Amino acid sequence: MSRGSGCCRASRRSLGAGCSVPDAVRAPLPRGRFITLEGGEGAGKTTQVRRLAAALTEAGLPVLRTREPGGAPGAERIRSLLLSGGNWDPVAEAMLHFAARREHLARTIQPALAAGITVISDRFADSTLAYQGAGQGLPRPVWEQLSAVALEGFAPDLTLILDLPPETGMARAAGRGEPDRYERLGLGFHQRVREAFLAIAAAEPARCHVVNAARGADAVFADLRAIVFARPAP
Image (cartoon, rainbow, N blue to C red; front, side):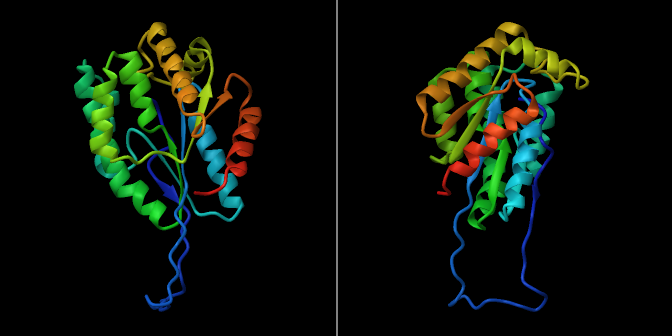
């Protein structure tokens, strides 16, 4: 979908060398929280993922930041294939995204959450619904079937949708280097993507929050931070 925050980075805690806790007295770890940032090109997701991760780390929480497509070794190889080019059939393209997402979920996200780590991802399944669904015409039932197989009902605890006019986002994206294949698609495509993200937010208000990303990065971050810190852990 777009450039992300690199592969996975996490803060780690461990006991001192030679120390262990017997299974009988080891308390179960509270489940981590899964937060996703979504939105069109040039919305500033990568910057805000990094800033949110730093804020949560400063608050004493173990945090892992990751991205899609990617976030696990096999998923990163699929990412290279998706972003480098190719005139994919929409169903085939969505299948590649969900194959990468399954690897990401199984290898990275679920183990981190089970260890009590907060995971912040630059994109997740909503992006496939917006980009391949609204943008490229993938039927909604196909997305639902692929999601059911790959995710088995798993969903983010909180989704932050960074919204801005596609003209603004594309102008920003043009200034950051060679465009990927999604950034090279026309304005009509990106308008459909924007409308799809807003429709997702309207359909799931308990999970999704829309933030005006046309403003400066500091103002956007202030809103995102307030939402994240006001939301209790699962």
